[in-house]
Image (tube, rainbow, N blue to C red; front, top):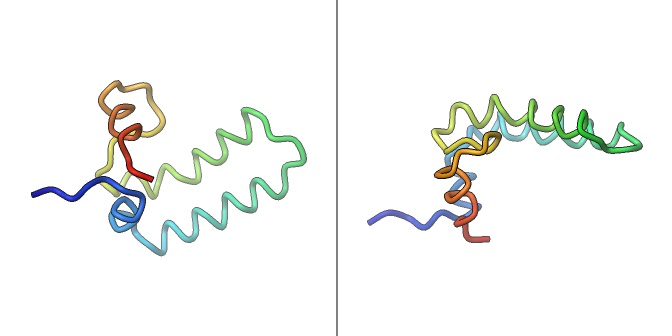
Length: 76
């Protein structure tokens, strides 16, 4: 039986130290940007990519239909 995909289950698949560092980067990026724009979103994505790459989770940055369906189906 597979576990339902929820945010806590996904969090368990991430390296916790790398995820904490990425969150700190994201907070810094957002806090230092008075006006969020596409460059801000790109910087946030870039902070997430290394953590995500090691997780085995579907892509979040490409318009892959299966990945979009996966992320859409994640239970909050």
